[in-house]
Image 1 (cartoon, rainbow, N blue to C red):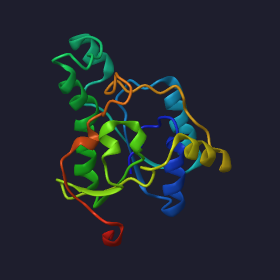
Image 2: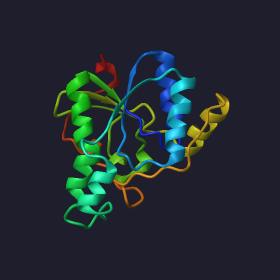
Image 3: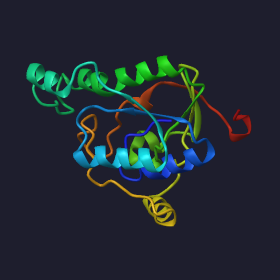
Image 4: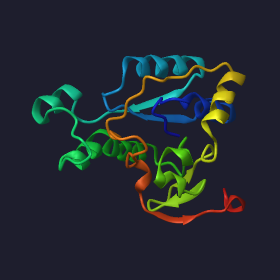
Length: 186
């Protein structure tokens, strides 16, 4: 599964580790996370005994900014290369290393227009079955789950690959081969 330790990330992490305690949790750490996000990730790593596998860009934030300047805005010609470097390339490395048949993700339909069109279960062009158990959950559902299990939350989250609210980061834009019905789920 993947996590970015954004608000409500504890819900998906808790749900999944209750089912499979040692499930690999991939985090593409862009280097642009807030101090609170790093503390939140560590708190959840310890509390849930996460099998956390961190993938970082090949260049550090300091290197990137010294050579290219601050993160580009979404209208910049450098934006796509920036997102590829900080998020997509580390994700590709994680997929190559782990070779998953299934990818559990905490995306929700209300996050972006693209996600609102997603199926809870689909297969991407790489053949990976993508499963989004929280796709239909609302913020209220997530908040109630956090309260029920006394889980922490993180409101100090920043994702430089999404400089505009409800923008898609790119991980979930991989062409989908076909939606898969629940009955066909392995």
